[in-house]
Structure formats: C-alpha cells, structure tokens
Length: 335
Ligand code: TRP
Image (tube, rainbow, N blue to C red; front, side, top):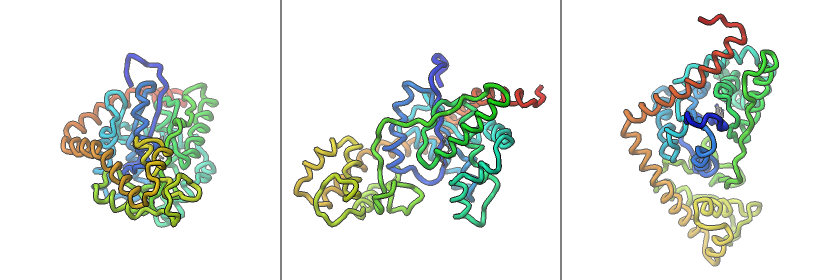
C-alpha cells in the first residue's frame, strides 16, 4: 500500500499454505495479480491460521508458509508495491474474528457448504475452527476495509457471509466496515484437470491431474504425456466433445503461443503426442524463471524473513486502525 496514493481501491486475497500452487492458479489468478498493483492496493495473505483447521505436520506447515510467500514473489508480485504477509503475524486477524463470532449465527455457519463438505470428509476432526472458519475469513477481509476480493466459485458463499456480517455490524453501530465485493477478473483462460478434463485443475485432486508451479521438467513431461485426450485423432478446439485436447490448446494459447485458432491450424495433420510435447515444453520454459527465482529466494531466508516482517508491520498499521474502531463501537474499555 503506497503512502502517497491513499484512495485506491483495496484488494485482499488469501491463499492457504497447503501444497503447491497449480498451473491453473497461476494462469487464472496469480499471473494477473501482477497487473493489479498499478490500480489497486493489494494484500496477499498466506492464511496460516486457516490451515490449522485441518491437522498439519508442524514442520510442513512452517515450510509451506514460507514457500508460498516466496512463490508469490517469484511470480512477480513486488513486496514493496503489494503487502505480502502471513496471517498469524498480524494478531488483529484473530482478534477481529472473535468479535465477529459474536455477530454471526450458528445457523449461518451451519449452512456453509464448505463446512458441510469438510466435516463429512474429516469425521474424526470436526473442530470448532472448521465451523468458524468463515468468521476468520470475514475478519481478514474487513480489517483492511477491502473493496474487492478475488474469489473462485467455492469461496463465494463465504464472501456473501462476510458481507452479511459487515452489514449487520454497520447496522448496529453505524458505518464501520466497507462492504466487500467479489473481484471478477477480465476473462482469463480456465485450466482443466489433465486426467478428468471436464473438471477444473485442482491441487486437492490426484497429483497426476495437475501441474504444480514447482514441478520438475520430468514430472511435467510425464503428466502431459499421460493427459487424457480422446479417440478422435484430430486436433480441434471443441471443449464439449474434446475437452482434453481443448485444454492443452488453451494452455498453449494462455502461455503466449498464439490464438487457439492459429494453433489448431499449425497442428493440422499432427498427432496428440506432438500437441502434448509442445504443451509440456512450453510450460517448462515458462515456469523455469519462476522456479529459478523461487530457489534463489529460498536460499536467502534472511531476506524473506525481513520482507515478511516489514510487510506484516504495514498490514498491521491498517488492521489496528479498524480494530480500534470496532473495540470502541462495541463498548470495550480501552486504555
Ligand atoms: N478460504 C479461502 C480459500 O480456501 C482462503 C482465504 C482465507 C481467503 N481468507 C481469505 C480468500 C480472505 C479471500 C479473502 O481459498
């Protein structure tokens, strides 16, 4: 958040430090975030507190938190122009979450489809944090007077709830929070699973179905070689009838290899093997500089820690302002 231009719209984005980011996340979201710093004040938060709602091996969580921050930077997000930080480094997130818990109803939280899904999948660990996950997410967003939140379909319901909570609070105590809106980016290519090309590429599916940004060239080649196509033996862009082939074409196109139409023309008379190899090599080439920068950053933990510390301090200055207002409005006696 640059000090000289204070009135730019605020964008808040949170990503859980769980496993690697996929090529789909990169093409569909992160890559475009780089363009936002021009017009918006952006916060990119590694939501490590949210990650605790499922059991994690402590050392893994710690490593993945740092890796995600490094990956953001490696993808081109400038930590001087954006605020890239860890949720747990700014205690105001947890503090506001508690307050918001007192303004959120059990019924609202119980209706959240992610809660219902996750509690069905992890019957042995239906913890209270899983239930109140959305109020922590609301706190993330509302602390910064966020105008826009880039969310996928799975997080829309949580954003709706954040809006409801903010409106409820504003109604009770006068305007306190900006009501956040979903940020819908200009049409970006959607990347589908390599093994089930009707579904979106997702890191929660089997490993062969997605490309992780940190995948080694051999893994990338292997995954594309095994990618599901069809028996048409004809390279056409027809997502309905040839979803696998179309997915490869749109990945190529999204990575700057020309329009889908021109790719189809170029591949005339060629086989799926060639299309797969070309896609794999293109992805490898595009990811190479990101991976190199990531490696470089991970070797310089002192720099990374310094960046995260400075960025947390910048975030906290904003967060504190909102939280003080909230404490005052609800009647907490403050010194
Ligand atoms: N719940 C989001 C997810 O799983 C992550 C998240 C946490 C988030 N806090 C947020 C996203 C605030 C946007 C805004 O994807």
